Length: 352
Image (cartoon, rainbow, N blue to C red; front, side, top):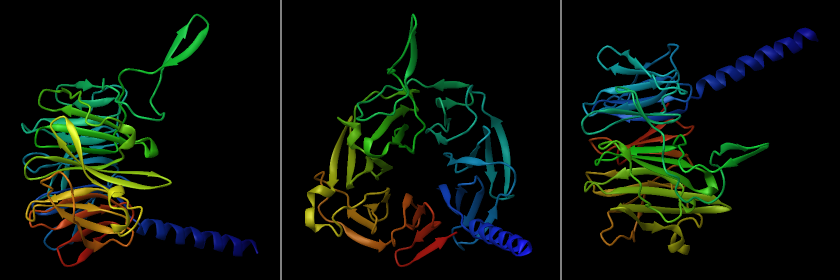
């Protein structure tokens, strides 16, 4: 009996290992002219050739990668959990360590950005960091957000301890984007309590202290993207008892709501439509956005209101977390647990 139990435990352990080992989920991706790069949830690097769709390499060394980006010259950059910054050579398939973070109280690299002068900025736990000049920006003004969740500054008066809400605060973002005007958009999604949104000017190296929304508690940022006229769009969805989705266009220092699921009522394919990430097709001059049912597209609204949209393809309830177009207008979409999809206008191919 003891031998039977030992065998069953061993067998179940092998089975569980093989099942979990076969499931690979990716947290972020970058596209250049020839390749698709992605880092997995366990910090490994995978590369696919965009012409053959063959997986070319999986990095199996001891480094855990936590950030991936592309500079203005198309060079792929990586950041690690232990603060290393590196570049990837597509010719030799070698990763070269460039530097290590010097910022205090932070090791992990969360995001990497490059402005139009190809200057690097990275997101670390305390804020935005310039690794070349060892400069940190951590004082980001708090915008009006409903609910709770901000860190409190501990205070003491005589024998009494209390906490005070700080004027400035930085939280590691959930969604990020750098636009053509060198604005780094940083959004921390807080569920039904909305979004903490900060914008950093990577040209003048300071926070852009503008209120793009009256109440950030009503915004659930899911993505940022830009059209061919350099307008920035924000997709948003709040989940509280039901889904409430919207799309905003940033004009100057204000946001204009161009799509709202509440405005369509019974005309939507599903009453509670979830709005996920979006992307812009330069070739078609159309906006794409994902939902729990599928990916839709619509013409650029000239009257600041999306009136008509069409289904492009069904996603079978895949949870899409990022979308981006290649130069030849293929839509690359990153899912949370189903790998990476490529849609060429006719068919879908899933990469694992």
